[in-house]
Length: 462
Ligand code: F0G
Image 1 (cartoon, rainbow, N blue to C red):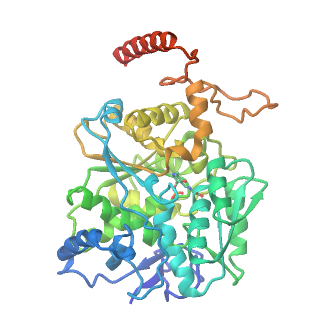
Image 2: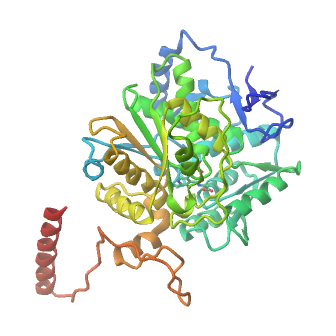
């Protein structure tokens, strides 16, 4: 029987799957879902089953989450809420690889999910669990992507949902999605951490079901991407898996996914997990830096210091008090991974390079390539190692940022009309300006020639 188990070593209390909890009711610790490994022995056959399901006409077979249902804590007749999530592409990215100093680099693009971010892989399981529990009103706090994802899945399940977002800090694209899917959107004064605090108070109300990643059923869906990735890699375990860190649910989920596949005997080692944060919102990277020297064992108590006023243009990860840090820490220690932070300039340039691979992503996702470049320069990652970066959100999630970078009007602090210019301008190292031209063949040809010449020179220099 699967259970919910408190992750605190001194507690470890267990609860039934249908108890509506988000944290341990005895000690307040985070909860893991634990499913006994009854598949050992037949595990290798699962690889074939999971592959075969891709060709099935059944939605729950084809979903990149539900086709791995043997790993999930749901019965066969669960009332699945799916939008055909998962099954996202894994790209070779030669330009980004050269930029990082690697022989090759792969990008796992979770922005190719139905609402354009990795959140969908966890929302399908959380909203399915909401249906099982008979919840009526689903809520979350969000920097935008969880909002869009919950709004879509709640609409699909014909359930009401309410979303708390920090006013003025969510990209218009994410807000537009959320409104269009019909969610109640509450804009609060304050930042994401304030919204998260408020929502945890609300969660004590029985009529409300909380679907932030503190909810362990979110993590269950998100963990399946580990199996999907390994399948795409022919079950060859990469040396490093690098992802952005905000509330730290995603890194917790990847870690859990890999560990479970290891326990099942489907892989014989774990990739090193690395979490990259933006410099102005990097409590987890700071925690790692404080402990890097002596590499604590799993049960060494560590304490994260919250950042009161986090600041980054990568608004998706503008988080100072990550809810799942203990789980993410556990995964970093288990896999002998890393955590680091990168500057706004590094994020912006890395993002433009990912674009030049024809892939693109939102700013938060680009922390990965910026982080890998640093790790290669510091010889923590070897040039010929197998590295996968996880891109978490689609390029079109934050077009303001993109346009401003290419126009060279991107500033590190809010630069809206009427506000003082207090920030630093991000250099458009790889800026790509639009060129004004008159509507005549001659002028167009001349301009094109000139542009091509300039690009040739630029490419020689880089
Ligand atoms: N990348 C993107 C694009 C995100 O939207 C988020 C988180 C992360 C990375 C970080 O993932 O929180 O699991 O460490 N977005 C949340 C939201 C907070 O509300 O959409 P994490």
